[in-house]
Length: 119
Picture 1 (tube, rainbow, N blue to C red):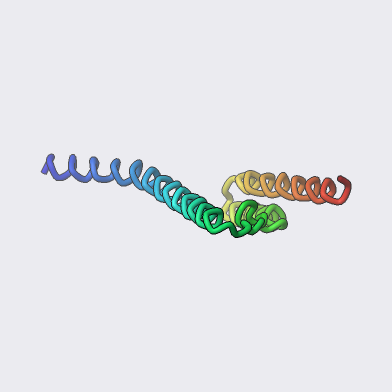
Picture 2 (cartoon, rainbow, N blue to C red):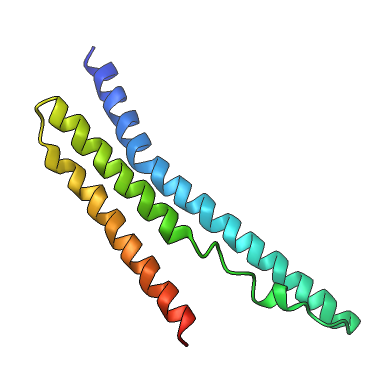
């Protein structure tokens, strides 16, 4: 019986610590693969003497409102956690953690938007 418990503990630790490492490795591998494909495409275009599209060198930026969306989601999550924990007589202040992170993202979004308007 001791060996089964040891095996379960070992497998649990390997999965717990190995899965995040595997996921990060996969993400990095796919990013590297995409970058390598872009460089190969640029090389082929240069060999043929064709112009390289600017989108290939400088891909379009991600959504400008990503900080806004993330901030609103975190503020809503913070409010929901605070209400949930206050109803269950738990520590409602746990909701402040994601809520204040959301407020910080909203402030960052506002500052970036203001800086984009006034170069």
